[in-house]
Length: 171
Image 1 (cartoon, one colour):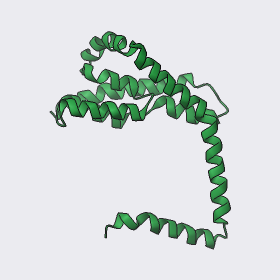
Image 2 (tube, rainbow, N blue to C red; image 1 turned 30 degrees about the horizontal axis):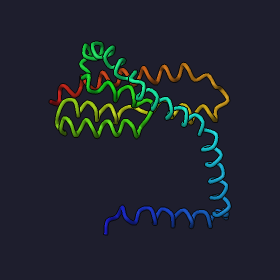
Image 3 (tube, rainbow, N blue to C red; image 1 turned 180 degrees about the horizontal axis):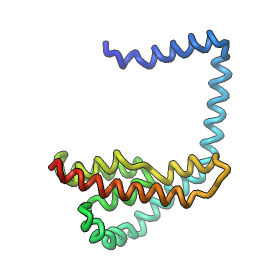
């Protein structure tokens, strides 16, 4: 039997024993946590729905093709393949959408190509900035989200360029 198959039941058993020792009502605590999680889900739903709608409109409008055409020479100058521009644009908005693009890139270019290595590194090293911002700023009293989002997007862009430069050394 694999150790990892029993890890979660062991952790749950340990948690129940610890809660009994501390005299914590596990059921009420669980229900309270679920209620808090539901409240958070309801409060961030409009933000997430807006992000999903904007991504769909962006794709349907054909604006992504125009942006890829404009940004292609700039990214090419920094060594970023034009095949990755759509992934770079989509990743800050949608993790699952960018995973689908990564799967498409792997299918089209194979597992050991420069484009695929860069795409996998970009996917793994960047975050869905707008989703994280929506979750964080919905509960934060300070609603000044512009500067942190710009800093996060700049960090993602710099890490993307550096990632592609580093991948050149491994091919």
